[in-house]
Length: 462
Image (cartoon, rainbow, N blue to C red; front, side):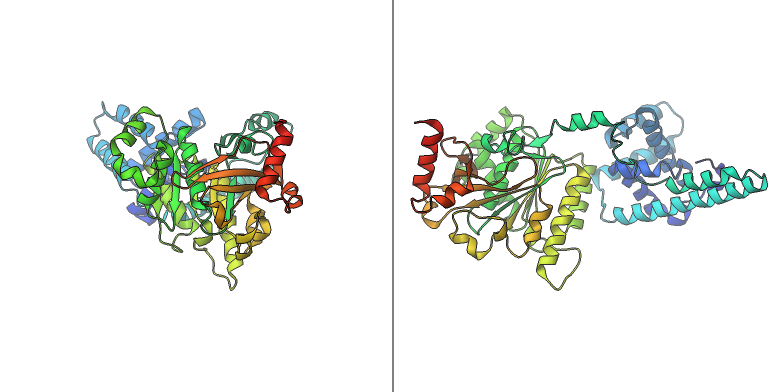
């Protein structure tokens, strides 16, 4: 923007100090929004000198390196720059503000702040463009009027214009190298099926009747991500934070959950010897958390330098919708759509679970039609797997995992599995190749166990 200092010196003064501080907090936590703001505002918009100073360095770093600095890096840059200066007051104000941002972010209203600020700044750009148009018309430079307005209207929009097919071809080949969070089951993660696991921006759903093992599956995939050094954020709406933590202990350390309290030293030694990612477990009462709740929590974690590589939500069916409908299925559809949007916006895979309907409890294989209340939940998912097992199978841990939907590769595949609920651990029995669900249907007279043995013999020749 090309504006004189007198024109912009008090643009944000009308908002007061708390609001102005939140504007800069928003720029620190949302780089995409900051990239929009850099087109429609200048540091002089801030009435407060320390915020104007920080904004100038924040934008200056972006102009040089095409990326924004983290809070820690920005603090380091400012500390070095001000250490030898004479402006003691400015230095103290900057240090005090950054300290407050780090230790007490309180970001529940940042979305409102971002919306109001962007709208205000875009209006200032349009006002300036109108003044420039008047000057151009006065100077009889009519040809420039249209370009002035077009340029003004385009400012402050999301940074990317989209994928230019012939110009951006390198990006397509780069993305073929999927950055995934594996399930830890080799037969499921292989290239032909999940192609490495659940990738960035994707949402996976596990469906099963009550008591079959949905929550254990979510702990399993979360623990597998931790083993690979990924940060995991696990939301729980039924179990307590410590109960979920015990399940992670049992999976990661190979100790039955009932024995975890007696194995403290062994568990802590195990964690010291392994380079796991960080795990944050956050509990909300059933039906109290919405997508807004999760976004606010993510913003607070971002201010504390925690960025998840996988989000686990146990489970989406009992979240609160941001909009009320007469029908529960419409609310559930909206919840899953909002989760899918969150995964894409953050570039993070999300695993969650969905309750299967009553008919699924007696089925050999649970399919998409057994998703409780809203079949449309499956429409937004990239991966849907189901877990089924009958009452008599629970004693042995035997079960079946069915790939009901898969955008990355093959689906309609059935795997015989064993579930160790004492350790929230899943494994595929005898390491067989995947089986088609048709094999299960056609062999209903011989029984599940006999069919699996027969298929394994056919595959291996043993």
